[in-house]
Length: 365
Ligand SMILES: CSC[C@H]1O[C@H](OP(=O)(O)O)[C@H](O)[C@@H]1O
Image (tube, rainbow, N blue to C red; front, side, top):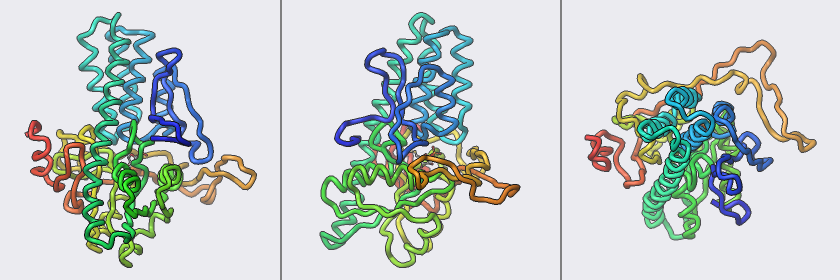
């Protein structure tokens, strides 16, 4: 996507040196556009753990380059396995991370150590290109949904879409998942508006989704996480589109904490609840999401403290709870398939059922 007219992806290899890896420091957005140059697998692991880089497809792609960086230094079998395990352990919920590392290992194990680093960069590049293409396809399939909604309404009626967290281009290599159809609808001239859940505690909505949509000129309004149900009750939400970190073969959906509550409110108000995902986010090995998907527990300081720009223009962190108060911080929840209206994938849209998924991915049957 473009930033001030310049096209960017969310991760890229330095054109000059041909091996260092660049990402945006997402903990500094929206107030600073800082590009980080990663030169070691440890720096990649730190960036993923601290959420300088985040978003299910993107952390998989960046971890793949982390393995390529590792192999520049030591391409032995032992180093390959050890560095892969280290990178895979950085975050537990998004299946894209494990998927990308497994794909890299399957590709690299049979290759002679001397050729592994070059092969790793090439495979990581393919992972990035595929993600960008898949998300563009998700956008086109989701656009059909929005066109249908617009056709049912008056031509200039506003379509109000609620989204949770950030599933935009900065959460993927490019285009995004939940936001891809919105960008395309806006560019086509459909009258779309987005209710942006702030998404406590890390505020990916307030800081990242709002920044993305504002940069692209998409009308949007940032709201408290707890406002969505009220807006739905008053007919101000036409549909919900969110991203996801892992979808099971039963179509249960793991996503940022709070997604489940939005799905409950949507069901109670007959608001369609759609989930956008590339097939790399499907975990075919898991059926029951609530019982089987590992939910990342992050530091309580993400609850007790908040980042922002202070009145002096400095990005700072302030405490918002009393000294000594404990905090719990599960970073994801699981929405059962029964609350999901449908899935938007690169292969098309389907019901949130095992049969629906297999209709698009019969090879998994
Ligand atoms: C397109 S994946 C976006 C997905 O990832 C986010 O999690 P995090 O910001 O912790 O990496 C969130 O669950 C989004 O829906």
